[in-house]
Amino acid sequence: MRKWLSAETFAVLAGFCILLYILIGKPFVGVADNGDFLRIMSSIGLNYYDAAESYEDRFFGFAHQYFAYDSFFRGFYPSSQLLIVAAARLIGVVFHPAAFDIRVLGLLYGLLLLAATWIIVRSGKSGSSVVGLVLALGLLIVFYDIGYLAYFNTLFGEPISLVSMLLSIGLGLWLAQQKRPSKKLLWLFFIAAFVLTTSKLQNAPLGIAYALIGLRFMKLRDDFSWRRLTLWLSASLCVISIVLYVTAPKELKHINLYQTVFFGVLNGSPDVKGDLKELGLPERLEVLAGTNYFQAGTAIKQDDPSLKEDFYSRVSHGDVLLFYLKHPARFVSKMEFAAENGMSIRPYYLGNYLKSENKPPRALDYTYSTWSEFKHKHLPNTLWFILVVYVLYYGVALFEYFRYYDTASRIRNELLMLVGLVGLFSFLVPILGDGQADMAKHQFMFNVCFDMMLVTSVVWIVYQLVNLRVWGRRKAGAGLSFRGTKFN
Image (cartoon, rainbow, N blue to C red; front, side, top):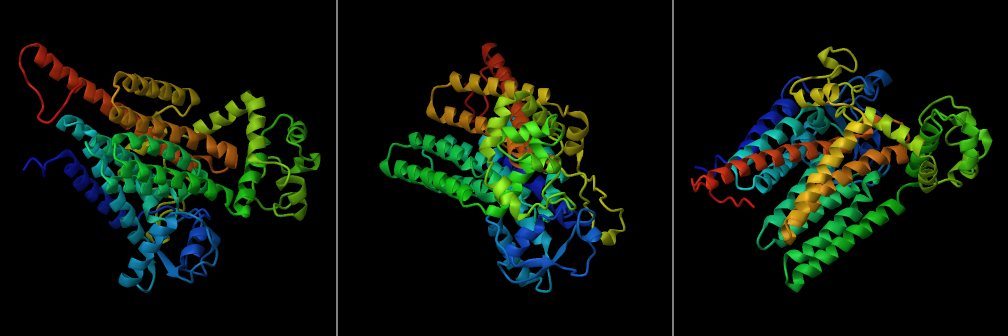
């Protein structure tokens, strides 16, 4: 009976109910397209359901439940997201051949989220029902918030990043917890890390960090076959990460570079001509300062052939990084701008409802939005707040790291520190890779990691309180202990 009443079982059952209510119930809830859907649709054989739909109805204002089936590879966007969308499309053809219902994809994401929830609670409850319950509630309140779940009923890439991040950390913690780690779990960990790394071009460098963590797993078992497999998987992930970045479509690199320079470095610059000169670019490009790649009516068109010689072939993201290193105050100002948008899980400019619901364009659904609204309205969206959280988080993590000398405990702490590292990376990459364009949406992965850090912190505090209570009883001679729990 206790098995069925476990914290992980409660979390999965409650999470399943929330998923059904938000993703399947009425009214339909999704997130309006901002133009990103097309790259996935053209790759996987989907298209807009209503070909005659107006621009205002198709973009920004209203969500979409149905999509038309179309031919594959009218274009190609390299992303692991294609795997799950392809699976959803295959299921959709069988059960709804007239049109693709996006809720099929939403449910697949939901199943992955439930799996991640079960794994994390099982691995993180430390044998204590109290700790397990707090962890379960933390995951249910934070990651089942509509700010996250509304993305599931869309073709955006955010859901695959969310579930693969949670799965990779959960599986890693489970591996480090096992007395004799399973090769199946090792494969699953690297698959989750692969999916995260290849979900977006911006995530490609994460594969190197996960590969390094993977190498640490070699010490969990002494047999040669385990170490060989771990080394092979780590090396493969590292190579895939590098290849993905090097072979990224040139057009995508050009877009990011344009955004980084003209909508980032030069956006609000006190000396545009001076900045251009320092970057090795001609002064004539000053007319593009503050413009973005998708903006119409610019003085020089973004695909003008002259820009290939005067801009795209002259500057790189490395040059931008060097520029910011020489001008740290400018970089801090960009970080402050990112922080202003860093506490918003959902894009508030993209509507959640179908047009048929007769809601105003860009209307939002606030069902089960306690966490996202609290975070958006009450947590300080400032750089200093983020720095304070990071300092405290890593201070405790390092304390725990040096407190225990066994390999498994240290790997668990390294995984939790990896969460913060991924968050920091996700916070900085939009600045260096996309300027100030759509900053709130581009801070999604930072939000995921920051929320994971907050949930981890709360659970750690509860664990310490439970541990202190048990220690106090033992000191008083009560001789009490939780069954199956080891308090260090």
